[in-house]
Image 1 (cartoon, helix red, strand yellow):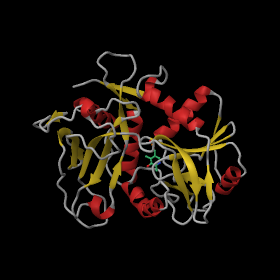
Image 2 (cartoon, protein in one colour; image 1 turned 180 degrees about the vertical axis):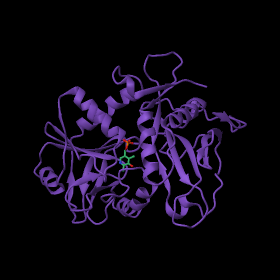
Image 3 (cartoon, protein in one colour; image 1 turned 90 degrees about the vertical axis):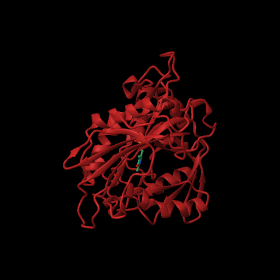
Image 4 (tube, helix red, strand yellow; image 1 turned 135 degrees about the vertical axis):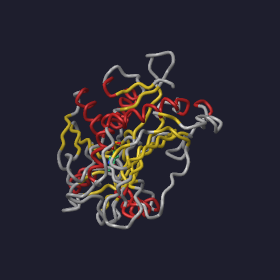
Length: 358
Ligand SMILES: *Cc1c(COP(=O)(O)O)cnc(C)c1O
């Protein structure tokens, strides 16, 4: 990938002078990847300085939401593997394949997965000093593809812009969260776009999540749109329920996003062998009743941004408020996953792609 001028012209914010608390997604690193799709083909990606991307208000992405994204992370190597600690991308090929799936679903060209991975590797290598050094922190990466063609015909764009933004971040939700069982709106319908990372899925959740924040809740827990009887997932996290020795999560469907973290958590639990992992429908009423009876239950979310987020409180419109006290499975899985992601564990090397400094 070629790079445009002045790679480090904006006084580098070095790894060790990044603030102790980074927040999530608010500090942008000064370099981005950009690649254009024009006249039926992808042009060579370039590394360039962060700045506005020229776009008309008539662009398909803005008018019709033709926009897809990924969320993935580069973690500092905290293992003993190399003195020159580089960083690791976590399961980048899985994100690349999902990005291609999302694009297809929205009538966009696929970015070849190997191009996706190489752009991300080049960006992380160039931004090595922005990969923060504390456990749980990461350089969060946001690949995005938008339709840029400017006309209002209700057809897909023919020109597209692929970008990768990088932001040194803390994990989202480091404290247990309060979740709201949403019985009115739904996140995804059968045959819709709920199983891909379409930007519009998030926009459709905003009115609900803003209303919840005012009431002290962090995330809606979405139910299936057809019956409103079973648990599907959170806005940006899959959901798990540990009930005694069983770890349950809804089976993948066209209304559930196939999370890379979801899959990783299931694999770690299968490795450990102490809990039985089951992909099965989780009726909401049964779950709430079991929590109310005081059964041994944990609920947690999984996603790249949060890693593993334990649930402290479940509430709903009727005034129901149920506290969940145990978080030991969620806490253990979070640490196990971070061990793998930071290269501290000796298992699941196949999930890591090592990136040196460029
Ligand atoms: C991105 C996302 C997730 C989490 O997926 P990961 O690959 O684990 O980051 C879960 N649900 C939805 C709806 C998402 O958009």
